[in-house]
Length: 66
Image (tube, rainbow, N blue to C red; front, side, top):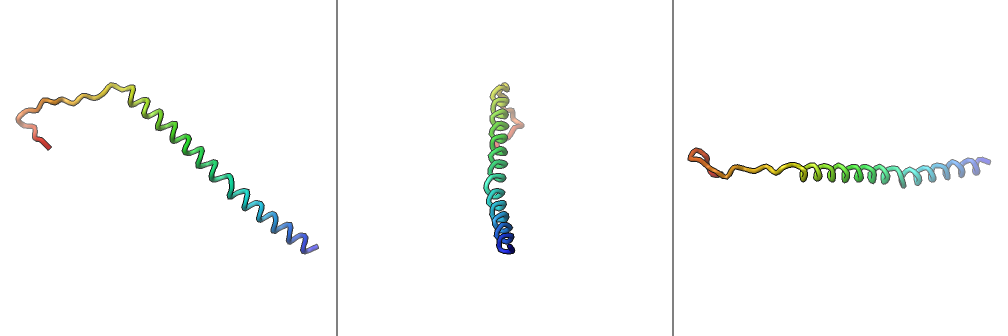
């Protein structure tokens, strides 16, 4: 009887560690990366929609070249 209880306990520990190690972190990482990709795409789309900033090419005597 004790051998059966001990075997069941050991099997439960092994199964729980295998199940927890397999799925949780991978799914969370995949979800995080998908959210990051969406946010980068949104940022790029917003940047392309803006008017470009034009720098003034005129230089006066007080302006120094870097």
